[in-house]
Image 1 (cartoon, rainbow, N blue to C red):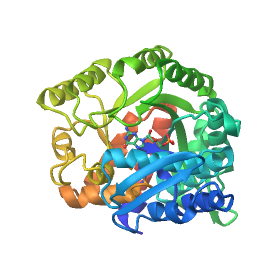
Image 2: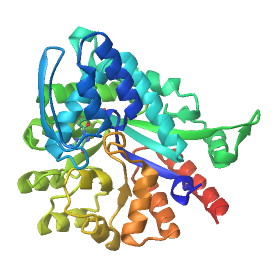
Image 3: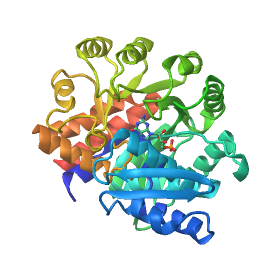
Image 4: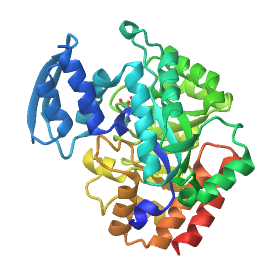
Length: 387
Ligand code: 5GP
């Protein structure tokens, strides 16, 4: 097994619907095609990302989508958001959300992700009888449905000693001859930048209610060209007052004032930080806010000019807290192991440095000290078997 797969890893920035398998997206689209709700032949091209560039204009559930020229290798950020609108039409019913959740957790576990923070935007769709709450319940159902791996997602139910011993045994743990992997999963509920203050507040209230099922925080995401910081601020402040963790997509486009506002808010983490200027870097470094780094996503969305010029280098050399993440493993055809491999080969880091990078991520997770301690032990035990 390649070292980047076998090393234990922590994933802190993964969007549920962006992490969907291509095969599942095709299945779901085909089913809608069979019902006559979409023109599958046109949607298939977009999903397979094989034709380059293609022109897609189709009518889905009476909604017109004009995809223009969707460049299939490197999609600009705005094109990616059009793709998400398509994905949501294909995926957003309860059983699909349950299926996607199950598969995404199994996929991360299969590459030795031992702790996963999965984020998703609760969606309301009256025609499907879906409320934000029933959407999150469908996600929880997906966590319960995972069969290839043991999932620990209910806080405080994780009996420390037992869990520690099972996690420590990791891939070599044999039960009735079967090797069982273990993964911790925590959920973040995302506020979409298209939402109103009231809708954002509804998501925060839901997160508070769902805490006992492993919801630990709030993410602000969605098209960064849309919306104003001031719209989400009341909900984000309330979330923080109530003890939820907050992470923000920050600096995905050039918007100096918003970046300052976001850094002044002092979120527990930020994602991306691609369009930072000197003064933003100064503020970020002095506040020590950890950065979720998504290399492939940033390259594919043309948010950084080249991989060599990625701000990972500067942050790493400055010993600034950072964590490698996938963002949207399905949309960008990547995996966390692949992100580790890219970082190692591009920035000349050895396996020891990559192991340390992975282990350090424990300090930035939104889970309690018991989980952190178990994870530290997992890494220590892996260090012995990897050497
Ligand atoms: P979901 O929340 O539906 O599970 O995952 C897809 C959603 O995550 C997208 O519609 C978008 O709101 C958000 N998202 C995924 N990738 C990105 C990204 O790179 N940047 C931002 N700002 N939002 C993203």
